[in-house]
Length: 182
Image 1: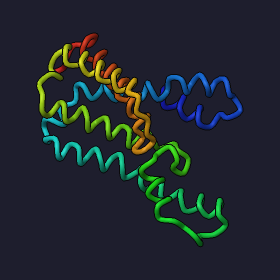
Image 2: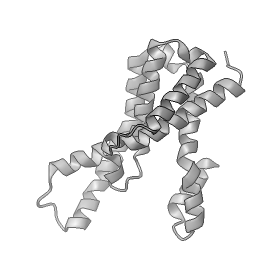
Image 3: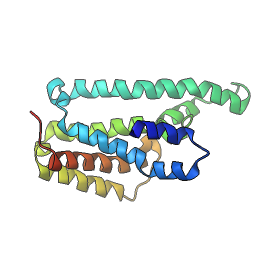
């Protein structure tokens, strides 16, 4: 249902109130679901952090880079009328500042990868993911990051500060309200 609503929200520009309402919760719900599922995933433990993260990187960044670069060519040509004067710095900015990308729609991919990096490292080197106190600590860290007075569009850091909170809450709900599997 969330995916269908997201597609409708991105294509229903003639329904501004619906779109505004949908945008209030569709990405928080996405990151919440990522945290909810991440909490019980054993892939990181089974594969080891390096292999697990490498697979995450390929699955998230390959579509991000391919879609961003593939759409960049026609966008640049339409905006500038030719490819003369193309600046490679612009290409780096499109990839490293996701919100200024071709449409800015792919920002969530590098953000999710960064969230996986943070929680994957914490989960790899500590045991506090195994209890409710640890997940509450993750929520507190998420809140502190959210209110951190540092703002940066690089690597979607501003979006990351918000996403990490929703992922932590997803893990908290999974830990507190649902019995662990296995």
